[in-house]
Image (tube, rainbow, N blue to C red):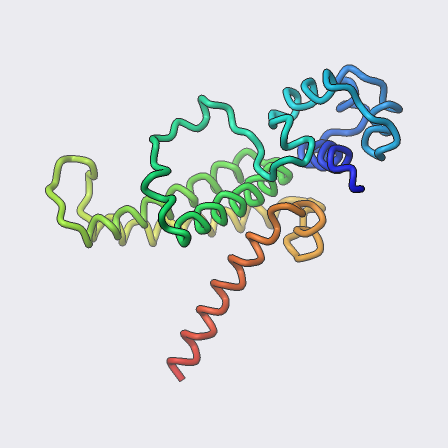
Length: 219
């Protein structure tokens, strides 16, 4: 039977860029004992699971392999109760799960790159895409100008497009200057993100199949 705890704690340590020695210090155990936990040689106590969950900022259920979703602190996720809106629509439910999991991979890769300026670029690009979608929706819906946006929908959409292009250029220039072992290929993604990789692969296939269909129609 697969030892999911051993696999999860090893993945989390590596995702944080921590050595085994440093992680052992944070967890209050010897490096040898942590090594045994990671290899599945020894079983840990419930107290250790709770300690590890706090150190890695994930739920105990995630560590034990009972869920694929890492917990998020309540003050980081102030959501309105929108489940009743989304639940009847499987396309939206599945789409949200796909975005959530692919963004987790994206932000984990950004963290491994380690450059705070890259982190800012990625946040700005993500925010710009969300803003762009809201402006497109707003332009198509009946709307009275109540001061939510400072620019017209048309101007906002044009700005978002140019801003996204500019930000992507900045990001590319910064990454080209980085020395890193991070890779974006199937082998790396499947190894480092075994629970979430299917969402990223599915998203890539959907986008590229749409591009293929578009090109065929234009021929």
